[in-house]
Image 1 (cartoon, rainbow, N blue to C red):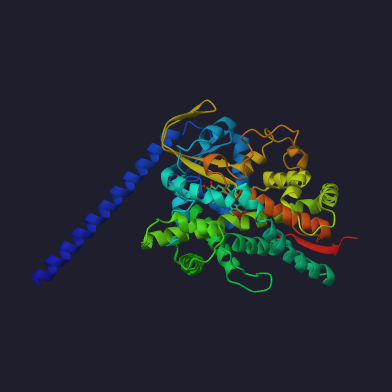
Image 2: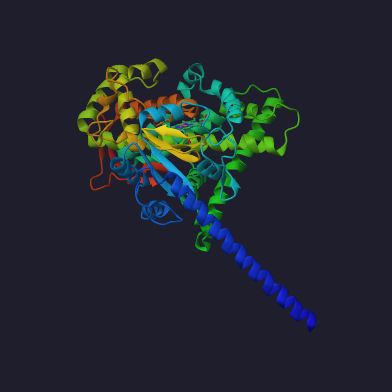
Length: 504
Ligand code: HEM
């Protein structure tokens, strides 16, 4: 009896102690949040929704209602100017659209990508996804070593050699579009271009034929699931703690595992081919294998590291280009005059030729302008961010070190102060004789961490667009929305529904 009451009293004391500890930790955290507010409150910015959550609540509300978070950031940039701050829990986030600061920070290797976002991309709901691969590596040395090894797979010499594959895979899409035109059905262009970009990246980067336009594969769905999961995980700190989301989170983890399992299989096959002395292409997969430690026996971590980059190339290199293509088709459908001009250029440069050459791409100047203008209004991966440890003065405002700087190409691309009448789709803004935008247009980011696949993506996009314009007339199905779906990347909400007919 005495023992049990002693135990009970001990348990009560422990619980009381734990309760007080929790209260002290909570009060300590509140004090810390207050300290952060006092440090950054002199910077202009919208009022906070809540003391603890900062601005996360309004941004989450937009996301939950299917809205576009970047539009809110744009409205704030219009209202509060080139530097404004928002809070997410105890993080001070400084949104910058000042070109000088954009140049100073993004062009320098000394500011690492911010841990708030990139650590979450590395491990999605606790399941390794992009790990320490090229997009997410935060340590400069670790990133630089990988980038040097990957560079040859993106040299212009190597890319020239990919023209055959770009042409061949784009022809498969044209065959599919021929069926659509013949059957006079509606086509969801976003779906179709998604298949072609996935087909291209798997063939070009990994030497594998997915033949997606013919087969059903879980792959596109898994990529989509991961991307959506990323948006939830990055933007909502409490998402994983809500029991209602458990099923969904398991689905996301399963999708991550599917991508990595496939990578594991393809890497093993390629390594076996290398060991057998077979001739293998110097493609992205071969380079990925080289980025792992050059030793006889690979550790588990080396294997994981290769998988990080395998998944990175799928996530970074596929939906991005597909969304750009879909937005481009949407804007051309809305602007018949621009469409006609682009068609005329394609007719003049490639005529009826099926095989588009690398040199032809250089001559499709107006089509380049159209693709650039598409990414001004619709930068499919709009933002990048850096941890800034040191004090800085941006646009005359002193900003104490310890903040996250966010750069958003959606915001800059739509600000009247950089682009007159910003919502007007006007490819002539990118005419070769027009002044170049000064650090306010960066759909591929800027500086050392800019997109490695920029040229690859634009060659691919041009081949697909040129063939489409060469062979088909297309019309947007009336009544569809031209809204943007903010699903981690930006996509056209409608899917861009078109009817097609063969050109005379
Ligand atoms: C329209 C198409 C594309 C757009 C708009 C785009 C945009 C971007 C952006 C904004 C970044 C910086 C991300 C960040 O700071 O977090 C990036 C990085 C990257 N992209 Fe792309 N991308 C496209 C296509 C591609 C393709 C086709 C590939 C590969 C075949 C690719 C591979 C990469 C890689 C590896 C990085 C990381 C670079 C580094 O940090 O060294 N991207 N891309």
